[in-house]
Length: 77
Image (cartoon, rainbow, N blue to C red; front, side, top):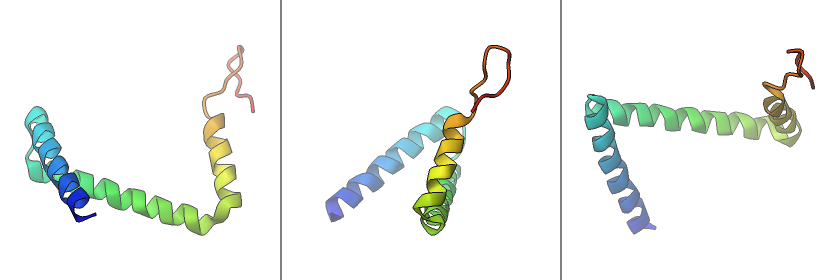
């Protein structure tokens, strides 16, 4: 498990450096953005777990429904 964690860290550092060079940003900026994204995803996961399976199902149905318009441009369920 430790080797996997080290490999993940090495990969993250390498990709962050490449992304920073391509975008013209510093590696610190890229890593900070990645860290914020991870924290945000963890919060969403916790919220979904707290909501319970019934509420999650309704949220997923709503997401699948987004953007479904009939030929007249009206939203259909």
